[in-house]
Length: 249
Image (cartoon, rainbow, N blue to C red):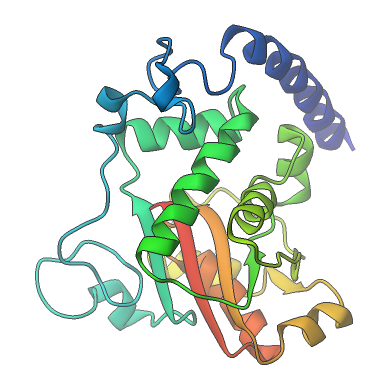
């Protein structure tokens, strides 16, 4: 109970900070990277050309399954050792520099409105890569994370993406095992940790997923263990395929 109360209090403080940040950094009019005032032609993305140049789009030789950078071959050693249960994973940017700053500022900082721009990048990337799906799903956050942040970050991205792409987003999954700190776990340990962490949200969700091509949304892909665990549940429910799309990798 103590942790829940602490999370609620932290969430309350963040909401107060959000209002202050909205005044100091109005959406669209200042750069989300450096905070400088923007010319009108850059309002849509809220980023100046200099900062956008710092975003490292994922190019070069990538694993055909998880999208990890590889030097040779078709798939990475991690996917060879632990084949993911999703069909393919895409990420817009490398998780470094400004992309990392945007994710952290969105999730655990004072700028939840950055979701609008993160989702736009993801939608534009999906269109450019001709990624198609029948519906969107997302990786659900733990209860403690939602209480601390005041929102489910992946759910928010999925809803915005769905609005931009005119596609249905559903909360097909729920987390039944609360997440532990995985930063010190290796790939094998991460896969084991999240293997039974998710379940279908309802019988209705199973009906909606059956036979569908699902696009699974999250902010960052690390080992792919969490996405794979979610894909397992969706495929057991009859999903035709599960493609993963994240903002960064």
